[in-house]
Length: 452
Ligand code: MG
Image 1 (cartoon, helix red, strand yellow):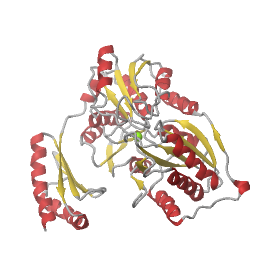
Image 2 (image 1 turned 180 degrees about the horizontal axis):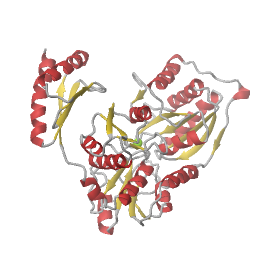
Image 3 (image 1 turned 90 degrees about the vertical axis):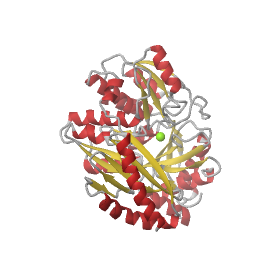
Image 4 (image 1 turned 135 degrees about the horizontal axis):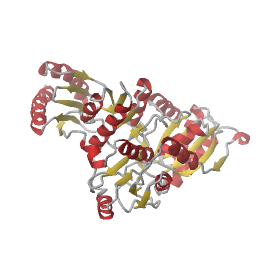
């Protein structure tokens, strides 16, 4: 692979082209070397390249003296949870999350079950680049064993969530890593469970590993036809959840996140909720009316969980469906999310459609502007000042990720693309008219800077 190995969510690329067994073995060796690990938990999702990369990763670990505990096909949050529970020094999940079937990757967790931060990732990269692996002598090579400890995770979820209503849920794991665990846990919580695509299949023949309105159309039909209470779907590795309401409509990601954040804020006065810079402002609307506070971070669950720890936040989430519930752990967790959403509906004595309808509908417009890569730094430096003076009425300006300016009736975000010669403009307004008006003004300003 060219450039940095790690992206915003671990190492990711085309299986056997970019993410090869040799790379997996090097990452395994680097993790064992850097953390001086004696015990590492290794899991994977259902991808066809999973076993190949798992075995290579384990070989790397063993070569540097670590013992590998292989938990097989599990959701990413389960792997993170087990890493801490089993008192391992690190955890490695082989997954490409919601990416198409031909991709795969590795996501690394520390002994606390937290995803590796930038510093730890840099250490792994450097160890691989300089080939500073601490290989052991023949007598100290590690051992591997297969273990099934998923019941520890299932019990933990059951302890955290009690349901009283017999919900009829249609569960769609999409042939991914939640295929057996999600139906099993929801059943144990007392739900009547109908399953769809609940077999492990690395070709993902039923739908894309990414749950969205389009890929969940078949699930929506089943929910409607059966008159079920809710449809629940997960991404390929089960850290994201998406929902279909009792009428068979896809529950908008931003509004569901905002409604749930509002619900959590209601339970505790002055609570902090964390989300990323791209999420809709309806989360502030829902949280602030319940006397809570919203903190925004860069896009990526690693940043959300770090900020949550710092602020002792009660909840954090991104509008892709990755929600973090600190009562169990700091890894986004789809199964836990679905159980807690059902509990929230019970607490508010409502159905999903009405629950989501509490969050207002706003309008978002997006625009890309061509911009040479070499000019990006200069422009981003000037954008802040230029927006500040053009919108003197702004409520807030932040540079946590690009430049984000908050107005009374909307906000805008200007970011330089990390991969393409583009500037990306995002605007949200209380109405489409407002959004377009803000976008028109922002476009003129940024264009002027690009053309300078
Ligand atoms: Mg995922």
